[in-house]
Amino acid sequence: MPPVEGRLSWKARSADLGDLDALLSLEVEGFGRPWTAAMYREELARESSWVEVVVDEQGEVVGFVCAWQILDACHLLRIATRKALRNGGIAQTLVRRLIDLASRRGCSHIELEVASQNASALALYERLGFVAVGRRPRYYSQPVDDAILMNLSLARAAAEDT
Ligand SMILES: CC(C)(COP(=O)(O)OP(=O)(O)OC[C@H]1O[C@@H](n2cnc3c(N)ncnc32)[C@H](O)[C@@H]1OP(=O)(O)O)[C@@H](O)C(=O)NCCC(=O)NCCS
Image: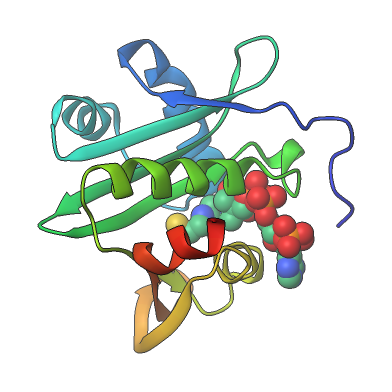
């Protein structure tokens, strides 16, 4: 799919309760089993969670990422962008922000699971330097798919940025 043109100025910020409707609508657009308002209220209140959004020039939320800090790991749980704006670098902006925030909180790495058939997500993570470290057969049920476990060493990401 060709990239969305002329939209290079995505801005990332932390989410708050005012973003709840946008988060829920992105959930419905992106996932078969969307997270609920109660789940996001919990995530937004939890100190060890990150919920980060990207907004367009009008301040509309066009994507989000949700992650947990577990000891020195940052576990990326959810990421989704507006369907009509995919392949325009929104998710890349979100993951780069997470890399920055997790590094500043002292995390050694970011870990995630991704469905083996999710080509755009795999391309996104590989482009940012994540490497496959394992596979969980039939981890997903709707549709049935294996999970690829991926890891990004934050020390390596920082070294490559300099
Ligand atoms: C995965 C997702 C978050 C990516 O968001 P995005 O804003 O389109 O991501 P980006 O534009 O930053 O990057 C997408 C990359 O995938 C590539 N891509 C898109 N479709 C592809 C395909 N079918 N095969 C291979 N690569 C593909 C793009 O070219 C781009 O790579 P590039 O930067 O090297 O050109 C988005 O597709 C989405 O919301 N999906 C639904 C929810 C989901 O599956 N989340 C991930 C699992 S938690």
